Amino acid sequence: MKYCRWILLFLLPFSFTFCGKGRAEIAETVKTVHGIPLERKQRFSGNYNKEFNDLQDAHLASAILNGISPMALRDDTLKLKEKLVRLPDELELYKMHNITHSIPFLVPSAAQLFIDIAYNFRDSLYSKELPLYRLYLTSILRTDDDLSTLTKRNINASENSTHRYGTTFDISWKRFEQIIPDTLQQIPPERLKLVLAQVLFDLKKQDRCYVKHERKQACFHITVR
Image 1: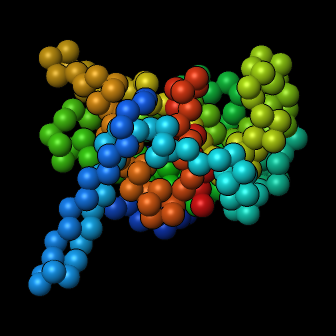
Image 2 (image 1 turned 30 degrees about the vertical axis):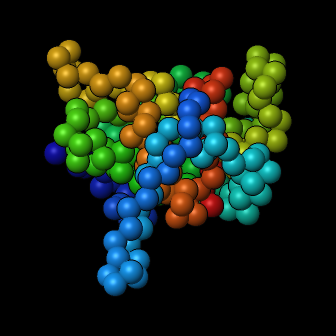
């Protein structure tokens, strides 16, 4: 019940609809009647770098179109409270990991996308009769002050990061947390990554988001479209 109350409190202001290297192989199943295709399903099967390789220019253009004006300081969120959603610190769907250079705010469309990803990931695990795991959010909204501090520590951090617009978040593909710890039924991160990748692949095919597979940062970098 506590979990349900968290979900309801988080979703009340919004109308959400929930519903490594390798060969690129997209398996398609086509149902036909008298040779006429009725349904086509696509399945992600392993090539992260090819299927999740949306360029920074595409992420940035979508961020500018759908996001807020970049903020100088964290206190500026008070000026944009009508345009941003604050994510709860933790739900059974996800955890925030090492969020030191970003803050848990997104524009409503990005918040909806993230919750859809989290629910679809959970439902996919459930349908496969696998133990349930939480996703790890590793980066969300960054102010200019956050970026200034981050670029001093990380030379790969972009000064015009899409994280400045509240449209972008990173989900770890290396770190997951089992909701009910069970040492006899643990799923390796590689298998969970495949489940998450299928969820992202489906949403990407629906033109819901841009996705970049980040190897060094061990995350999927995701921007709402």
